[in-house]
Image (tube, rainbow over all chains, first blue to last red; front, top):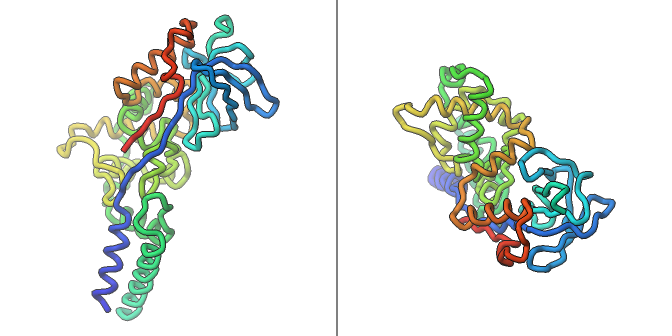
Length: 102
Length: 203
C-alpha cells in the first residue's frame, strides 16, 4: 500500500514537469477602413485582406514612437500594426501611425 | 497518526492517478488545487528563513528600474509577458502555467522569496535558475525583484519599449523593421505581402 502511495505521489510530481507547445500570434499591418462604435475597427492589410479587429479594455494603444495613445485617436485612413492576443480574435496592441501619415 | 498520513497519501495518489487517466499528461490543463497547494507549500518550506527575510540591497530608483525592465524584457518576458501577466504563447502552454505576477499571490511574496525563485528556479515547473551559482549576478536578480514590484504599474510606453528589447529571430527583426517603416509612411506596395501576417511558433 505504501508503495502504491509513493508511486502515486511520484506520478503527481512527474505530471508537473513542464512541456511547452505554443500556438500562433498574428501581427497585421494595414490601413483603417472603418470604425465601429463597440471599439472594433476594420482594416485592409497590405496584402489586400479586409479584417475586423476586436478590441477590449486590455488592448494597448500606442503611437509609432511607443508613446501611449487612445482608442479615440484612431482614424479612418490611418496606418496601424496590430498584434493579436493569443485568442486570435482580440487586439493585444494597436500601434498607429502619426495622423499626418494617413 | 501514521495511518492517517498513509490514508491521506493514498487518497491524494488515487485522485492524481484518476486525473492522469482522465486527462493524460497534457500540459494544456490547469494545475489542480492539490498540486498548487503542495507545490507552494514545498516552495515556501524550501526557502530558508534568512533568505525569506532578506532585504533587497539594491536601492529603488529610476536607473535600477530601467535596468530591471530591460533585463526582464530580454530574459523573462518570453514566458511571463512584458506586463507580467503570463499571457504569452509559452507562458500559457506551460504546466503549471506562468502566473499573473501582478496579482497578490506573487506580490505578497517577500523580496527574499522572489529573489530565491529567480536565483534557484523551481523544480518541475518551467522556471529555471538564473544567474551564476557563485552569486556574481545577484545584483541583476535583485534589480529584477525591484521591477517585479513595479509590474502592476507598467505603462503602455514601458511595454512598447520592452517589445523592442524582447528576443527576436532575424526574421522577426526584419518584420519589426518593416512595421516601423510602414508606420513611418513607406510605400505599402513595396511591403512584401507575407509580412502582413506574422506567424510565430515556439516549441
